[in-house]
Length: 120
Image (tube, rainbow, N blue to C red):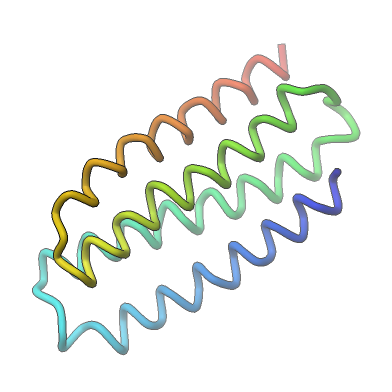
């Protein structure tokens, strides 16, 4: 399972950097400063949690069990829902997408809680 999460972390990191570059270079002239900030928030949380997935994958041999695995999956779900909804909101302007963002935030929080309980 560690290899799977290392691969997913690498893909998430790659996509986070690519989307960050796209936002900085391809969207700066097309988005309002407010929507660019929304996009950048998505990138920030995306990259933080890509690194978190990598770190948790590295810890898996020490802390086995469903909680540590759940933490990785929840971080991945958080990236898709939280960051993904912010990317789409910034690019499309469809405000209803903002309703999905808190679900991603809850997934991030649940992932961190799983990690804490795994350590206990």
